[in-house]
Figure 1 (spheres, rainbow, N blue to C red):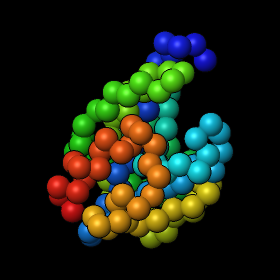
Figure 2: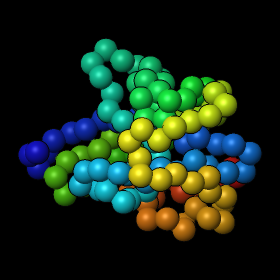
Figure 3: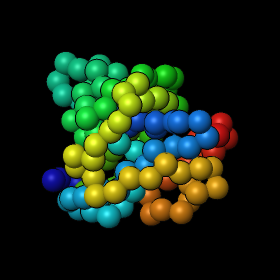
Figure 4: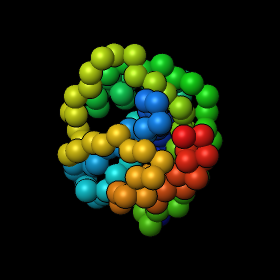
Length: 131
């Protein structure tokens, strides 16, 4: 990847009561780090369409998408990330980790108990404010 590569992704902040769903990467450069599930948008997709597809692929789950929390702009050493982060709720009874090593439902008090990716950390105050 070149220094100035730009990656645009969507992320689901899945809420169940007073808990938020966090996933641990099971592969790649950031293996072992925690993140909100989601992924890259494909050509022609809306943010919502991409998010529904990514959650189906990663978790075998269906979601209902709520409001945009905010869009995070973050410079990693090898690329620039634009991450559109949405409140979501699960509408399917179960989920399955297809790509992640682990997952946890975190309370407000537990939000800082995992090693988040830097762009994802920037959302924690927004999330804690509504939990």
